[in-house]
Amino acid sequence: MSNLYIQIILDSLEKEKTLIQHDLIIEWNSYFNEINVPIKVITNDNPNVLYKIKRQYKTNIEYESKDLNFFLEHKYLKEKVIYGKKYLIIYPEIHVIEENKITYTSKRINKNVMKTVFFVCLDMKFKKFKKNLEKLLT
Image (tube, rainbow, N blue to C red; front, top):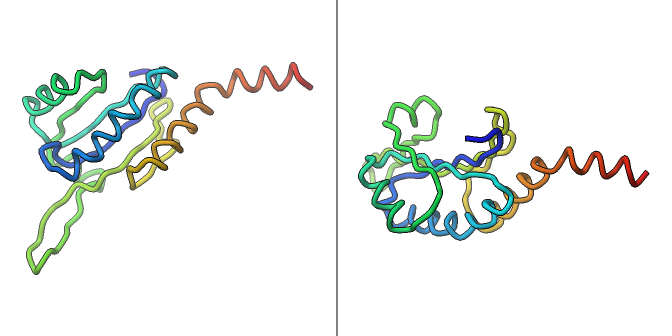
């Protein structure tokens, strides 16, 4: 991983609701490729499922499988009660990480958030260039 990348936490990619979010990530991946910002998706799926997804979508997105302890430790796993029955659900999150520090986070994944994340990455990627250009123009 480079010093700037996007980390996305998703529930199982075998769930329809998660696949909708994943399709949005795939859609935006080309924009992030243009500015050389890699995307890393972390789920609780087993590596065989992730390998199948990577081949199916033919993408350069990095997929990583983590066990439920990882999601518990980082508080991504929440308990949801539906009709009196308790379920453990991994809620989606997106993080922009620079130099191993989270610089931006969102607990939603939608088109507006992806646009915001793109511009945050663009600003971070080119902040040195912008500083030098500002000096030249003043």
